[in-house]
Length: 359
Image 1 (cartoon, rainbow, N blue to C red):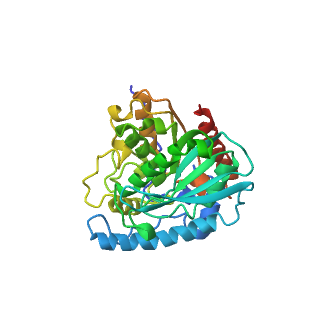
Image 2 (cartoon, rainbow, N blue to C red):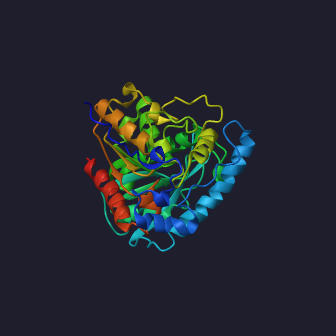
Image 3 (cartoon, helix red, strand yellow):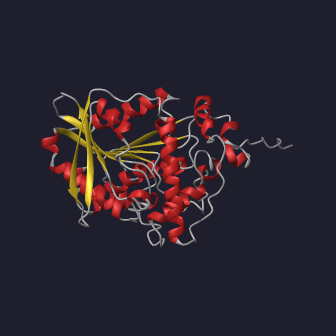
C-alpha cells in the first residue's frame, strides 16, 4: 500500500495568497516592527496604472511614488548613526550624450592609500532616487576603509528623468572610465562595481558592457545586492517563484512593472542582457571578474538574483553569494536601525570583497 502524500506547506503567498508580511513566520519580528508604523507590514493596493497605459500616466505615478519612498527611507533610517572619520568631495564629468554626471566621492579621512575602490550605483529601479541622497551608505562604506565614487546617473523617471535605457547605463560606464583613469590619483588598489536593487542591475550590466566594449580591465569585481534584473514583472516566470511567494512584501509587482516600463518603454530591450541581466547567456558571462550576489529571503526579487549567481557559476566565473533571512527587499540596508547586525555584515562584506580582489 502506497504511503499517503506528505503535506507540503509552501512559503509565503505560494501557500496562502492572502498572507501578509506581518503574518509570515519567516519574518524577523524586528523588521516587521520597523515597517508596521509606516503601514508596510501589509501589502499596498495595486497601482492605478500599468504597462499598457500612456507613458505620461506611468511617469506621473512613479514621480508620486518617488516622494513616498523618500519619506519612508528617511523615517526608517532617522535614528541610525552616520559614519565618522570620512571626508567627501564631488566631481562633475561629461557623459557620452554631453550630459553632466555628478560624482560624490567619500574616503577615510587622513588615511593614505592604496585603498579598495567602490563605484557605487544607487537603488531605485533605475527609475527614481539619487546619489545625492545616499550619503549614509556611502559614508559607512568609506568608514570601512574604501574610496567610494557614487554616480548620479540619469534616472528613467522621477526628478532626474525621464531618461530610458541606455542613458543610465551609459553614465555608469562613463563613471567607470573616469575612476579607472584616476586610479593613481585616488590611490586605489581595486575597483569593484557595486549597487543595490536597480543599482544591482546597473552593476551587473556595467560589467557586461565593459566586456562587450573591451574594457573589462577596468573592473576587478562586482558586488550586486538584491538585483532588479528580470523586468517582466507582470508575467512572473515559473523559474522565479519568489515573485509570487513574496509579492507585496515591502514592494509589489505593479510598482516593479512601472519601473521596468519606464526603463524600457517600448519593450524592445526585454531580453537584452545590458538592460535586464537575467537574460545574459553563458557567452556574455564567461571571463567576467569575481562576483558576489546577495539576496533577501522575503524579497520578490530573491530568485532572479540566485538565478544570475548560478548562471555565473555555470559560466566558470568566481561567484559567491548569501541570503539575508527574515527581511524583505534591501532590508539589511533600509531597516538598519532595526537589524543593525545585518547592516554591519553587509557593509563589512562589501569592503572585504573589494580588498580581496585588489592587486
